[in-house]
Amino acid sequence: MFADPLRLRIVQLLARETLCTTHLVEETGARQTNLSNRLRVLREAGVVETEPCGRFTCYRIRPDVISALAASLGELAETARTTVATDTKRSCP
Image (cartoon, rainbow, N blue to C red; front, side, top):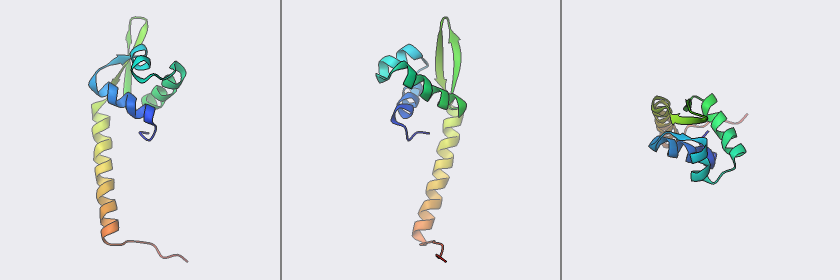
């Protein structure tokens, strides 16, 4: 999800403040279509949520989801360190 540079930038911006699409376009320099596609992925993943702001849509980060992702990545990193340290590998047939 964060392998896409634009999605990562959106998350970084929304971690600082709630923004509407217009602000996100200004901040990222991305086209509206590209931005909307990335925001859809982030919404579907539950990373961001929307709220109506007059005729605009505002986006905000869900810190609980980011915390859960960070915890999962921490666990994955620990597993990887153990795998490397113990040279765990499956034999080829």
